[in-house]
Image 1 (cartoon, rainbow, N blue to C red):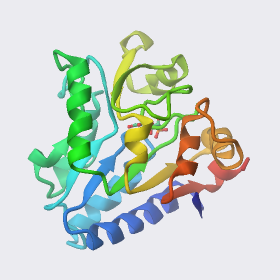
Image 2: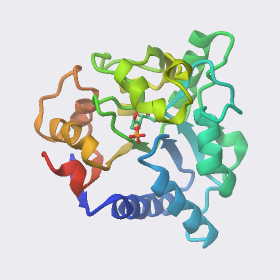
Image 3: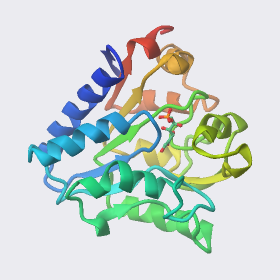
Image 4: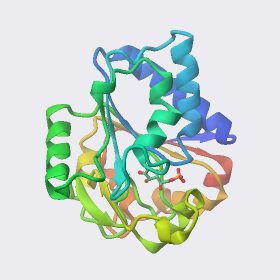
Length: 240
Ligand code: F6R
């Protein structure tokens, strides 16, 4: 793991944006993997600015998102589809046809997973952004997910549902299932960048940096990858 220390959320976002600008300009047809959640929002804001300034273009970019809730339609304000369009896609020059997000309301969810996995196999991801769950999840791969997992349906941990409940009006509305790229799918990305900010991530970051590689802590799989950058702020690194 290559670890970059940032001062705070803003600084983490800037450093992450800088790396992405570099990669976007180096690759001819970049294939990017996006994450949702609070962590990458700042990076997306900055990417929008860079795109407006014409420092980067998304016209040749294909994208794959890590995950989506099962049961939420695209236009549901809590769907990851909606999140990505509001926070990034509608503000940049990316081609809508080249955006991929798992369909959480597909009639056959198993088939949806297999087809999503196959699309990624046909278009290997150059650069994947990751957040970190307080329980060490990446994507929605909760503790004890097999490192050989591919895109699959998961039962969300109670802790994950609680962590995400802030976006919903009540705990009952938080979906219980999601579609997520598997750990093996994520590991096949050519390059990965994991972001972490805030004291609530400090235990998870310490475990990632100092702990063993174990399926009980999904993010630890990243230590087996040859090109991973972790950008974490001081609060998130406080226990490492
Ligand atoms: C989101 C995702 C999750 C989040 C993680 C951290 O697409 O895959 O693994 O990255 O739950 O979420 P935040 O950033 O909200 O703390």
